[in-house]
Amino acid sequence: MYICLCKAITDSHIREAVEKGATKFGQVRKELGLASQCGKCGILARDVFDQTIENAIDNEQLFYAVS
Ligand code: FES
Image 1 (cartoon, rainbow, N blue to C red):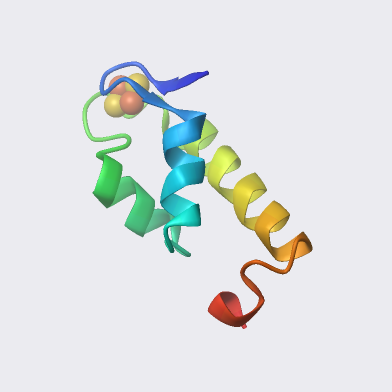
Image 2: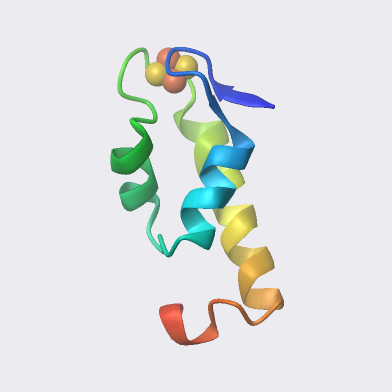
């Protein structure tokens, strides 16, 4: 699903960034260029990021990264 239409960024791109080690939304935003044009995608992008981090913590993939 497209999250950012201006930059053609999908939810998969955000999840991939987290899988590659991003633990802060700012990292993902900077790396992908999220919300860097009109900014309308910021809230939804943050929701996808938060959900991805929570899932990773639940699966114990990020236990050491965020603790
Ligand atoms: S929709 Fe993401 S910057 Fe416009």
